[in-house]
Length: 157
Image (cartoon, rainbow, N blue to C red):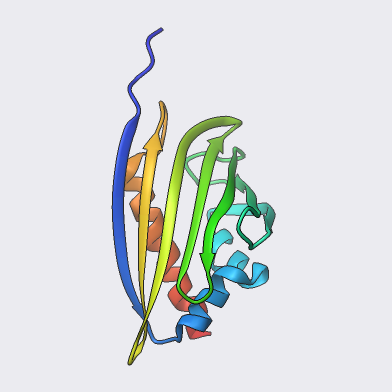
């Protein structure tokens, strides 16, 4: 059986938040806050979310899809390592995702925060490689757009 070629894709999403770079950065650095906007969803249960927010630190999450989702009862896992952290400016994480124990993508995500008069401009650059059976670039970009919407809601709390 011949495997399909890997798909490489990069996208960038820009957002503006009415919050200081310190508040935006804290939403990535504080494990309880990040769990709320990044891990929790109406589509799955969070079985585990751990983050050691430092260069070289690990971030791991395990989710179980709920009934009514495309993959009811199936586990989704994400495991990453923080590659670079500059307080109030940048976070870089390299991570891999698996569905039911089968790795389907690897990503490098760079979050950059720039102060503005109104708050913070954030740029999320996602560089990914997708393997056989992956969700693909369009779904991943959609997912990050939803996550950044959740971040906006968290910052408005």
